[in-house]
Image (cartoon, rainbow, N blue to C red; front, side, top):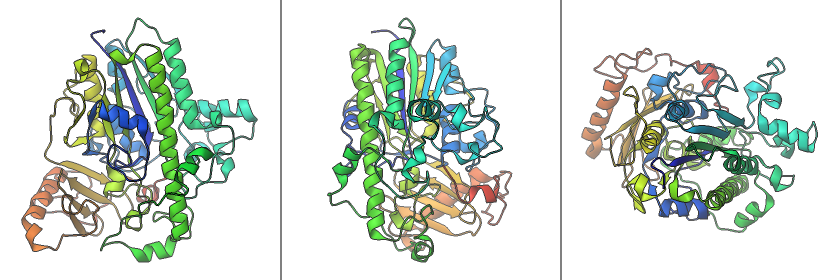
Length: 481
């Protein structure tokens, strides 16, 4: 066993924190991820503080909060100019750093400190426009799309299913399974193990686009769920049923479908994509074993944010509810490196904590400027601040292990959920007298956190509604990824 472990970070896109068999989900089957959790450390209180792709990944790669990355909403084509990144610091520490799959940075081929990247970002509208420079156009700059067309012809695309990358429609993948982007990420990750320098520890990030829409897993994975009785979406006393009625016939909307049959089809497709990813993760684990690497490799697993999946008449992410902000987090490897094995750790964790965790595993210095903290030894925080620019629904929230306070910055509306008594957030208890003192306490944390922010949300004594969010409202109303 070497003194410094290899580190494999496996990441998905838009996977809910509850969608693991190990987490007790009644429907989703994830045998390989369950194995990692059973043999490692599972964190049930892990969150994404700004739950869309770009800001979440900025926190992951920099170890900073959204307030310090400057990304408090979804906005494409904004340069990444971070001097200190996870891959960059690991490279300084002597690690061979490789990313396979999704980065979602700008420029599209920005390295973020990696020595080498084989890129697949999924379908990104902003990089497909006719006026996009050729070097930035996905069909040239994205390695998977370039490979797919070399294999299947110039017209082949992930859109051949007829589905949108933010829609709720679902149908099986039309080509041989080996051409699916999920398989491609696994295959290229396995090939990295063949061509790595065996004298050097490595950091491999295997970054899957699924289960993000389109829900297009191969047919056998749809068959797993087709005839199951699936748990219905959560409903609460605060749901906006009128909005669902208004938008529920639009295939890519923020509420999801209004038709119960189409809700079920989305759930089948989403769960199918999760199990497909899980099995491809299994291929990576088998390859690590064949290369005799499991005894000196630590594997981390997480996602950038969740998916509402019609809970509370909502779809996609960007909202402050558990389906959107809670993410899976597992650290699995030899106890000599992780310190613990086969345990559940209730640490309140966030994506910013991944960078310091990997640096601690590598024995590398952890910059004092980071907001994140290593999760290896149960270091904890009492609460976590999150937010997202989202048009009229722009919001701020404080979440703890037991409850959550939400403030909508444009209207001043408040919500409070007791996550112990009401984990499904079915009752907005903001008017319940028994919670008044607790709500005031959490509101005070938010007032303090936002004091001096450039938007003017707080004067140090109260929250001020109606201020202009930092990011452009027009761009952030409908996050497209």
